[in-house]
Image 1 (tube, rainbow, N blue to C red):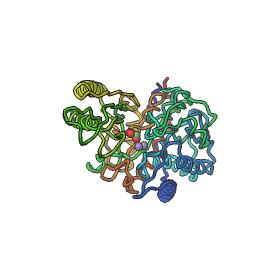
Image 2: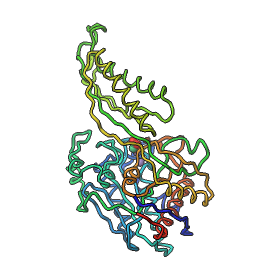
Image 3: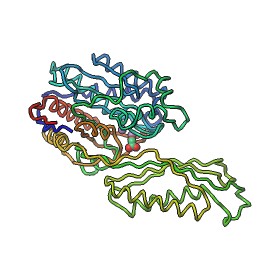
Image 4: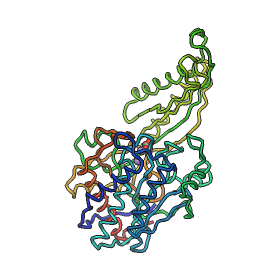
Length: 424
Ligand code: GLV
Ligand code: MN
Ligand code: MN
């Protein structure tokens, strides 16, 4: 991996806060849900509508828009030769998404380019803004699928064969919405990648920081468990004779909470989905399908948590006389971002007069995939009350603008980087 030794410079211009806000609102209004959020699950009609809008902005700016074989949209300002400094994120959402998760990074990237263009400033490298397919992983797993394919971490054919939670095949959905592009994947490695995102957690706001200089992303372990028991009558089956998937699902949920609490530190565990079948008041269920999401910034600790869960599931299955089959949905090790790019973000934020916290990301992001092929880092801004994956997600405009301006000077500095300092 090349080492950039980036030198901080300023473009001397600032983004247009009203344009940033109006695009966030326009994209949010594409697929609104009560409470001010959006539902744009990957590769649905709503995702298509969001993509069409963002693509129209890219085209209006005169950018070259390339859609690749997994549906990633990459818009490039071909203002110079060389590998581009890339930014971007995603515009798919969870079912209960807010207006900022992903959208902010994409729109701020366009804002950086439009600001520079309007000021007549031409960077010494191309700049590009990416919209990666299925970052959320809410409809298709794994999460960060588009950026994973982009960097060659998952074959495109395997990715296209992925099944949605509603049974649809990813490749069919991509074709249906018209975003099965011709540009080959894996795609070309950018010169550097910087993603701007809301924190989605409570730390920046609670501790009074405006900018997070994100130095890594915690590891993610996702599994789906199918628990099969004995369906029976709720009134007549003695408790001692039950093989009850609902009870087992509940026991796993409680165990995960206790495990995370006992391990402490950055360990988090979540059961986000429980489907019982037949799901009726007077029937001991036949089966349960649950998902478990386990994360830690430390790979050793993450493995320890996974091992303890496996042991618990084996004992529980024996004790309760149920089958528990595990299917792996995603597994990504913790990622450490490029120290030089993190330092650059930090020094630019300080130069802009902001308070800055170095921090890892608790959420998964496309930048963690791009970090496999180029120097990468992220910029965070505060999330009000740490609420995210929720329609109530909110970040104050002043913070959104601060983050976008830090992105602007970070991208500008990377494009103006002294190539003599670059070593492969
Ligand atoms: C993606 O948003 C994740 O971290 O779950
Ligand atoms: Mn996101
Ligand atoms: Mn998200």
